[in-house]
Image (cartoon, rainbow over all chains, first blue to last red; front, top):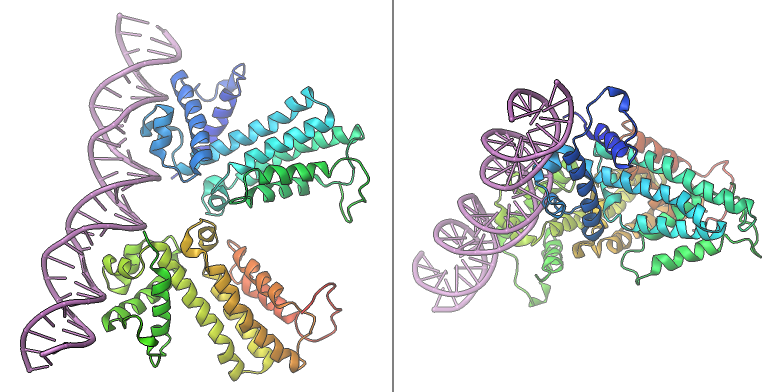
Length: 220
Length: 220
DNA sequence: GCTTAAGCGGAACCATGCTCCGTATTATAT
DNA sequence: ATATAATACGGAGCATGGTTCCGCTTAAGC
């Protein structure tokens, strides 16, 4: 009944991110190459299946799609919820990392706008996760904190750059924007297709420096 | 695959409430006595089990506790969700009916306070139902409307009486109070025991006519 | 190459939602 | 009161999904 998740996710991260230069201090063994391959395949497969069928999708389906047996799934992720949490962390990382990539490739406002759409797409794939988060499963306990810890700085960086360039208003609260977008995308079920994208685009456009009056009570 | 739930719940209600004086227009048959007994037992058993273990409790457990077979459960409630919805309606009714009972037995403010605690206790037993409501199951579609339709008038009556007696402030919005209490009780998981009760009591005490300044923007 | 421990796969186990059908009970016509 | 049909009952059984177990395979270090 002990939690392996954190240990696994950590080693997973250090391996997956490609920074194999890290000798890891020599404390714990290296992950075997085939195991690492399977972990990668599982995370990718699980992400795809979760996005298509929600987090309630059967483990067997994920295993099959990854080309491994269910035993392998449970070797790396002792419980279903550990897999879900790992995928979630992985996607948070990918989304956060996209910030610097976009920042290097585009103008300040363009980068901000593109990242927000990227973030919106990420939130939109989270069918059923909101419910899972409230289920009380310990595997999810650290997720909200991780979410903020990684995504907030990423967004803040983009906002600051755009702010410095003078292309957006300066009286916006980063956290408010992030949660507003999340709300828009979560409640966008069963609306017309593209609804969330349109609403988010609208929101971002509202950030442009322009003829808008200042927002009462906002800080950043 | 057709929905029997509404039909059943209706007949259930007309029988359960004890108003057997209603000849029902002669359209559909009377429910057999043994069937009615089992329906009653099931609703009671399910309410107890749901309160103890949440709405995810296994059907078999509910059937056993009610002293019937699972076949009987599914005869009356074609799907799990139909049972949950029926129990929910039943408890909404009980809570709404408590309003007039309390109103007859107590002073205006006392009645109001007692009913609010009753309502809070009702909301507190709803572990997991919030998630279920968002699951998209058709059986739950009508519940939110029913919730408002029955509980709002009940509360309004108590508020009006207390208002007329001059014992509470008059600038309160009934709907706001109801949802505020619900929020307090829903998010009160994993807090110290009695937390919700204390917060609700605080809220109600704030309704007393006294030295408070008026609340900005509130309507009744 | 040899050894060894990590890793693998999937059969099997258990829990749970739901269905089916032979049997029992109730209501009603006679 | 009895017969008969309609209704209801119960629980074995099916399908699905999470989780465990264990004999076989294979990467990694010598």
